[in-house]
Image (cartoon, rainbow, N blue to C red; front, side):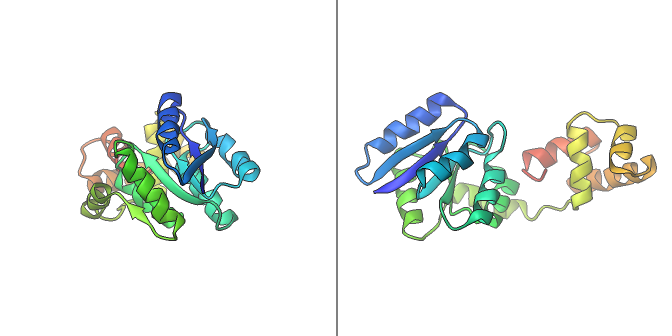
Length: 201
C-alpha cells in the first residue's frame, strides 16, 4: 500500500482528490492538511511514502515545504499538484528534489499513475508544463533583482526599498531599469507582474 499525504488549502479540491484516490486499491490517503504549517507535523506523525503538495498554501507554500522535506531526508517523496504552470515553479521544484509535477486538471488515473511511478523510484513530469518551462528558458534575473521586484510587487516605493535593502535610491532604480529591460516591459510594476507570473520571484 502506498501511503499518501494530501496538502491543499482548498477543502473541496483536497476532499475530491482524496475520494478519487480512495478508489485505487494500492493507494491510501493517511493524512490531509489545509495549511503549509501542518504538513511537517503530519509527515512526522504519519510517515507517508509520498506528500502531494499544492503550491499556493497559507503559512508555507508547497515549494518551500518541498525544499525543507528534501533537506530533512529521503522520505517522503514529493509530488506537486498545482494549477500553476509557471516555468520558475517547475525549475525550483526540480531543484528541491520534487519527483512529480502534476496539473490539477489531470484525470485521476494520471495522478494515480504518477504516484505509482514516484513510489517505484521514478519521476513524473506533466508534458505541457515541461514544454512551457523549456520554451521560457532560464530565469534572467539576479538574486538582487528578484529581491527588489518582490518588494515592488508588495507595493513598496523606491525609497522604502532602498532603506530596507541598505541601498541608495539610484542603485535601486538601476536594478529596476535592468530588470525592466530583461523582461521586455515598460514599467517596474509590469516587470514585477511578469516575473511573478513566470514563477521567478
